[in-house]
Image 1 (tube, helix red, strand yellow):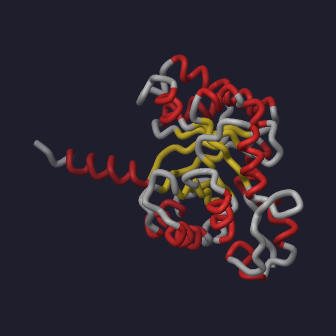
Image 2 (spheres, rainbow, N blue to C red; image 1 turned 180 degrees about the horizontal axis):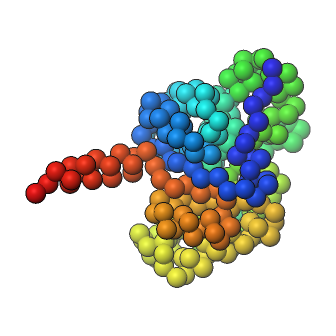
Image 3 (cartoon, one colour; image 1 turned 90 degrees about the vertical axis):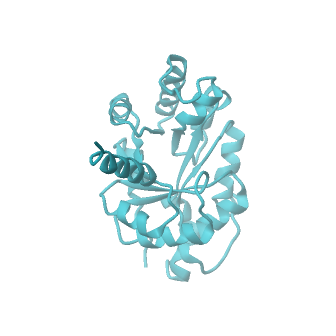
Length: 254
C-alpha cells in the first residue's frame, strides 16, 4: 500500500495556485459537504474553533473520499500536538504566529523522525494506515506540507529567514492578526499592512517557497492571486452559513 500523493504540496512546489475553504464548525458533516465543492484544499481549524483530536480525526476521515487536501491548523507549535495530529493522519499542517527561523526549525523537527528530528515513533497509527504503508517512517516527510503563519511585525521582519528554513513550504499571512498587531484592527487593507503582506510574499518567492493568505472577499482574493499568492483561502463554512442564512431571511423582509 502506498501513501496518497499530497496534491497541495505538489501544486505549491510547482507554483500553481490552489484555492481553499476554511472549516470552523467542528463538524465532520459540514466538512464533508465543503470537501465535495472541488476546492484544492480544506482547512480544519484547531486554533479558533471548538475542535479536539477526535473531531479533527473524524474530519480527516470524511475528507479521505475526496481529492481535496486536508490542512490542519493547530492552536500553537507544541511538539506533542504536532505529533498527535500527524499520527491521526494530518500531513499538511498550518502553525500560527511563527516569528523566527529558529521557531520554524523546531516545528520542522517536531514533524520529522530521528535522526533529523524528534517526532515520536509508533509502529501502527492512522497516518501509515495502521502499519499497511510500506516504508512510511522513512518517507513520511515526502508527503508532508508545512505552512507557517506570519502574523506580527517580528514575523514580517524575519520572513526571509523563515522562508529559507528547509521543511517550510508556505509562508501564510494571517491578515486579521497581522493588522491587529500593526495597530489597524479589522483593517488589513491599511497601506502599511498591505506593504507588510507584500513583503512576506516577496520573501517567500525569493526563497523558492509558496505564499498564502486568507481572503474571504472575492476582490481581495483575486488581487492576491494576481500578485502571486498561491495558497489562498476564499471563504469558510461558518461564513457561508451565516451570510447565506442572513441573505435568505432578508429576502423575505418588508
